[in-house]
Image 1 (cartoon, rainbow, N blue to C red):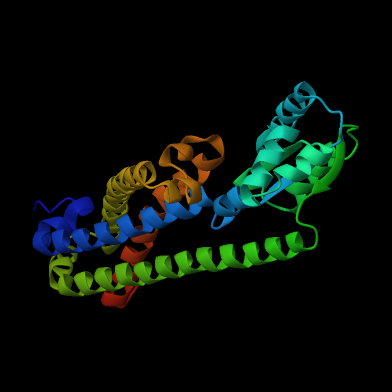
Image 2 (image 1 turned 120 degrees about the vertical axis):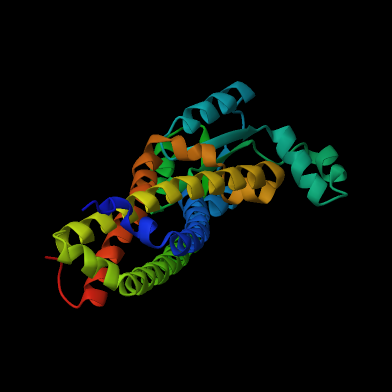
Length: 296
């Protein structure tokens, strides 16, 4: 006799139930996709901190604006540097006097006491002791540099707390993944139990249990992959809208377009494939738990 195609057997036998479960899975995958993009693009706390913490190279007196600008261009070419902005002594004085009004008399009496400087920000994915040392090592031998300001003793503490915070954020994401996987397993187990008589009917008529189990797992994997693509696309579109509208999101998270950079391609590909693998595993676990024996 003709039997339902094993790949879509659950849809054939329990279409309404599958639609409800798929809707719930889509919501779960949408949340996970959004959180994954936020954590991946922001590096946890890295992108925010890279915009707040800078390395300042104070220049010697007599360094011309051309030398200062040339130095900034050389620094920004370093792999760990995100940006390098030169400020002339005049600009340094204007910034300082804007924060502390009433200092024009000091300048008129003795000229400008402030040197020019270069302010350097690190890439968020290079915000580490090694990344900072790369920039400092390049600056120390330069004759134009008088002094380097990089946070001193506070930096090791900052990096330590950054690692802890990032670990907590990714650990929380992993816990959510585990919760949703358990939910998938419970869905698969309950559905397999509800369809046990239908599966027994197919086995009695010559359809191997292993074929049914493998077909159901393949169907679950394909459905999860398609749902992940849709959920990931919607999450990326939402994040793109938020980053374009809110400066804080742009500074702290970045934009989904950044995910096209080579460094992000592998994590994104693994994320798209992971729900399919987990759905297949949940299907097999649900089959074994409801059937009471491994697939034939």
